[in-house]
Image 1 (cartoon, rainbow, N blue to C red):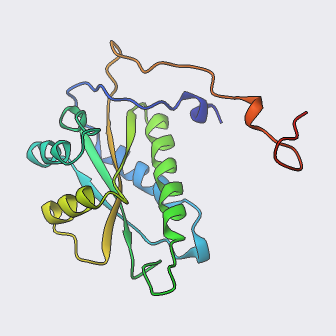
Image 2: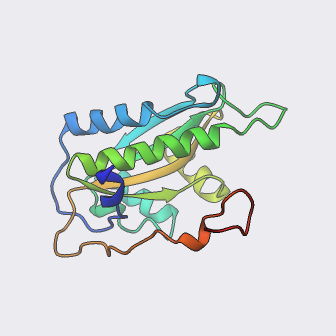
Length: 176
């Protein structure tokens, strides 16, 4: 569990590429996530090209660090595999959130840093990304994760996040 407590949103990176074997382990971790009905509706796009990373930065005001990152991983849903039908099936959101968190934890395990950038449900971001990277209609970008070797000169702030006031026992408002 130490990786959980080490994970922080890293937005400053060294100009150093990430090895292919590390990227593969990160993707494997994403695919180990739990999934409703075991549908595993995820698809991943690994983006390393400089022009593509710059284009991502222009799609969201929160993605300005992506050009300095070694890579970005787009976590996408394949609606044909899990959701998007007339019943309003949106369990895929939980599936992709779990996959995204697994990726972030493996990034730390690999000695890298990363940051989760929300894409879905922002329609402008979804459309811009889909257009740039040629996504068919059944593939929707959920999140983009910038990653790379962290710049030790700009470490993310560490702070205690546990707040016992947000823990309730048996019913809301009951605390120890």
